[in-house]
Length: 117
Image (cartoon, rainbow, N blue to C red; front, top):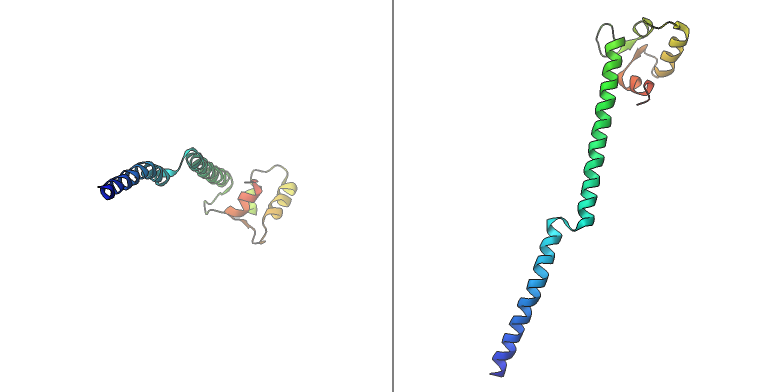
């Protein structure tokens, strides 16, 4: 009889421990606690901010090309750049400063740098 009672005590203890451990483990797998949720939220906000910044850069470059790219080929030549500039000498200097590869065309990456993006 004593053996059966010990077995029953062991079984009850194991069940009580399982009731305590299983919910804690499930919570960990579900996404952790408050700190994990905050970290996830922060990461999502950073991704959203990066996406908005990329979209803003893309829009700024598109607007620049819309104004300056006369033949709509996706780059800006010196003549296209100077077309509506009043100070041709200063504009030429600016163009040359950002035309790093000296091909006489401003590419999208060069325009991005020119716009400070």
